[in-house]
Structures are given as C-alpha cells and as structure tokens.
Image 1 (cartoon, rainbow, N blue to C red):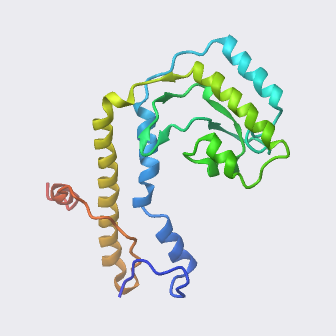
Image 2: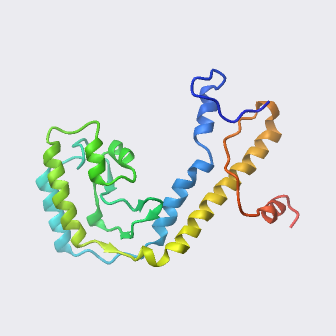
Image 3: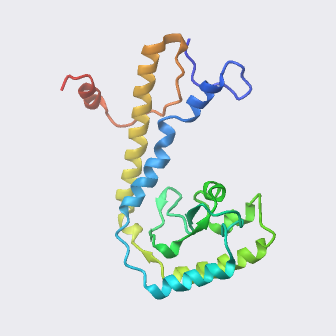
Length: 211
C-alpha cells in the first residue's frame, strides 16, 4: 500500500523519500506567489546620484560585510520585505532598498522585518547594538525616499491571484500523485495534496488529448 507521510521517527522512510515529501510541487506555491508579486509592482523611477552617494557613505560608515551579522556579503537583501502576510507590501524596490548581506542571513530573514530578524539573530556580531542603531537610522532615511504603489486599491484582485496560485499548485500535486500511484503502485510515495475547489475537469480532458 502506498503511503503519504510518516512521523519523523518512523523507520520506513528513506532519506530520498523524506526529501521527495519535503520538496513537493504544492509547497512551491510560495515561490510562485513571490514571483507573481514582483510582477505586480510598477517600474521604479531613477534614483538620483545624490541619494546613491549618500547610501554609499552610510554603508562606508558601517563597514564592510553583511549589514546584519558582519560576515562576508555575497548577496543583497531587501531591508523591507516585499511580501507580508500573504500580500505585497507595496514597495517598489530600488537600489536604496537593497543592502549587502550574507547568504545565511538572506535565507534566514525571509519575510521578517529587519527588527524582528536582528532580535532573534543566532550569530550576532560583536557590534550588534551598533548595527541595530545603524539599521534604524538607515531605515528612517530610506523610507523618506521609498517608492510605493497602492496595494489596497487592488486587494480583491490580488486575493484572487493568491487563490489561483493555491488552486493551481494543489491541482498539479493531485495530478502528480495520481500519476505516481499508477507508475509505482504499492511503492508510490505520495505527498499530501490539498483539495481543490475549482472544477478542473476541462483541463484534465485536454491533458488526456481529448480536446
């Protein structure tokens, strides 16, 4: 008999099986939603050279490295999250909104605000308090020049897009599970799939080549 999920201590799951259940199509909905929200924002206006120079001077005052922990900065992070509580924040990102960051902090911070993240940072730098002060001052300055769009005017449509993402990923997971079940029978590893509320019969009909 095929199985869906076992408790973490269950011995029946191999490492490959656990990985397959962890990296499911359905769980990629968050990534799809993030990319969708990126496309909702309008084009940003050019940032003046004066503001860019001021940003560089502020970063110089802090010193090299990740603005959060001081480690080697090999990426950048949006100081203000682009998404919060499943909705875009309305920020139109510019050069002023991204700061040098290490990959570890970038991955760990996620959708948290910089204040939330710095309070729970597990590898703080020796000058952690000074970094908090610097980030607070920089954030106040950045917000004065931030570009935004009116999310609330389109909240209903955005919620519909959210629903579309959830439905599409749930449908793909259900369809994948059926295929895996047919391919492997009792050896099938089936990931949990949410029930869809939309009628996907016509899509399935077309997938079967019956259109």
